[in-house]
Length: 386
Ligand SMILES: CC(C)(COP(=O)(O)OP(=O)(O)OC[C@H]1O[C@@H](n2cnc3c(N)ncnc32)[C@H](O)[C@@H]1OP(=O)(O)O)[C@@H](O)C(=O)NCCC(=O)NCCS
Image (cartoon, rainbow, N blue to C red):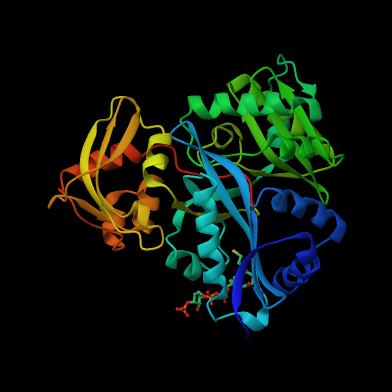
């Protein structure tokens, strides 16, 4: 090894990145298509690598996402494609790369970052913690077919509906005070909607996107602002019941479909957990929504060795549906958190759980219930992997 350096991934590194990805994740599909997508990350400094001399030995990219928290959108750097060449693993290369990724998220102004971990060790070291899940359920197509909603107008949708889809999803997540779902860049939504193998339908207050998966159907996203629309959209998918016996769907465990389908979701089901980290604690807290009527005044002591701007004595005020984190004098009553405890708290993990896992200490015990009330809400979920 000569000197390892973090670099911007540039066009001349793309063949090497593709090769390291193939060694890390298996055969990676069409190289030209992958390169096309990689160039979008290169274009605005969201693809970082590590080189040993001239040789690229690691890479990671950052999706420019937003995420719903308490019914408000907070910018989030979605970290993906973290790979280290096999012969360089176990020597701190992944950690070097991920530190640069965190700094880049800060430079880009993302108050949050999230990822799906293939191993937790690397990411916990750097302050990420589990915050929510992506759930898949399998329903009987015949159950969905008979859900009704025949009086609701449903039309085929396409690329030009991207803005409408973003608006409809936004309305639902705002009203439901959703935690976790992602907002993708419009270009990404457009590319999904123009995919010939995806079928999209839209109603006045909702939409569905689904596709074939072998001989079964798979719902990627279904947004419904009302019971009638939910029935109509699920029934549109279920109308394929003569061919597909089952419909897989990514949806949260508390989705209304669980209360409408006659049979409990069975068969293939799983959950995939994602991790969160606060990059800029004051901005992340100011960006998040909180339940109306909840009031919390508490001192915090945050110790964040990787992102020292978060370290310090703070006062947290929650009221009128919003929060403010301001620098404060040290307090013996302060709740003490590291970045992992802070991320899990932000995602609504009860304080008793954080104390039980050693991720929170101190604080005035009666305030625990107020923290839980402020940060609690619908369980965080995502519909998409990245
Ligand atoms: C996961 C990966 C990126 C780690 O890179 P790396 O350069 O080996 O990571 P580091 O050397 O900085 O390791 C940091 C810590 O994570 C631990 N770690 C790394 N890989 C691990 C694994 N697979 N299982 C458990 N711990 C692991 C290391 O042991 C180290 O902890 P330690 O200091 O206590 O020993 C690399 O192994 C890789 O490319 N794997 C294949 C692709 C992949 O899984 N990518 C992650 C997608 S989320």
